[in-house]
Image 1: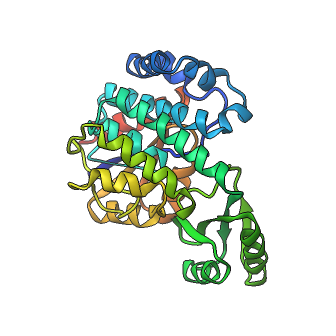
Image 2: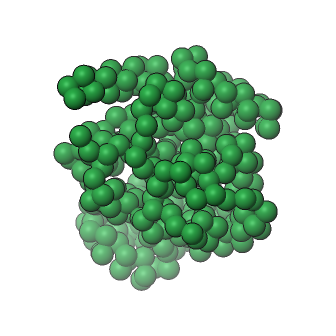
Image 3: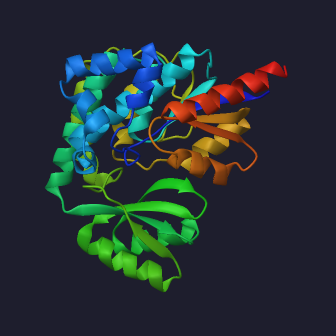
Length: 308
């Protein structure tokens, strides 16, 4: 049997009621939410009862999503499933680093709150957005980005590349994509994330990270910026992450090359599961976000171990 990777969901995967069932089935998951509630009162209610609109605000999304991601990972760990490596999509990478004990979960939560504040502020400084481009090769999308002054930012999988930019250029770019035979899907976000438009957020995050003690990961964590495991440059990569592209497809490909054959998405939704199935059709892909998905994953895990 090959290696197991936990992959932590990113912003955009949130939904009302997320994490509630995890809290009910796992003491470890419940402890994550209780700590978050102490640090930021109202977090549990936002996760369990918040509206779609409330959860869509970056200031709320990131601390809530971080909590659900970690809760799912700890629930699996409590059940005896231990990953060989980790990765997280954007915000999910911070949760992955906390799980890898680079910093304490509470300090990671406070860092995420600061990150959300900085990214929200940067987003408000510019009228920008993000779109997913489908049905075009990455090279063609990159060329169109250069022509129209926007940025390729999330390399999700073959034939799916997310682009950030100011609203005006993004509108013209969208038209050009259609003329080139591609399709554009606008994303419900409040800014041009993972682009140079987040430079001020990156600078602010560095100031916060300078004051934090960072340890080397207990489990290898693949970085969004390099698609390789973190090394000594923890602060540099975490700072760059908010204004740099997410190399997700390359990350999954590198994990496969390093022996991973099972991916378990932890946190709300199944976005990463869908991307991984397209990148690695032969891999086993599971997810944990609620009671049903948790039970299915545990059941499949036990079946595989019974055969060993």
